[in-house]
Image (spheres, rainbow, N blue to C red):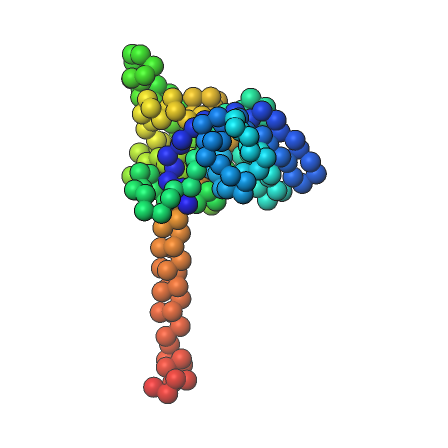
Length: 224
């Protein structure tokens, strides 16, 4: 499990595409020191397995399912990625529960400075479009993982075709310490909604089905 607090931005140094799969190498001189073969690591919000670890980086395999469901298929040498190690048990949750299981790929609409002054003091407004399949899970003041970053939704508006147009405030630290500052409008974004919202939906649906099965015929069948 992760919390969406990015520990380091890595750089893709190689990206070997194969039929239905790929292997990437990430330069990560800080986190590589803590990795062991087989460890999990979130790469821009996608939980991967660290392989071929050196003092300056690691490799990871991407299967067809990962390529199809995430933005990692768009990576190339030189791309910047957000990195986070799993959160040890008992550690305070600084962000929110992030599993590293991408629910869908959105797109960046804009990233605009909303304050003026030195770069280290500039606040930003990020606008993204989430696919219609995720719209019902995204609420104002709710949590949303964007490229592995735990962020808080400021506003949600209806987008075309049932999509959700989402606005998020970005503080100077998040802008500088993640790969957000490298993105351009139209770039794909890995989105993971709050898993608690999905469980709540499942429970509500189960309760509704259960109540709907209580009919006169079903009661008679049970001997009432």
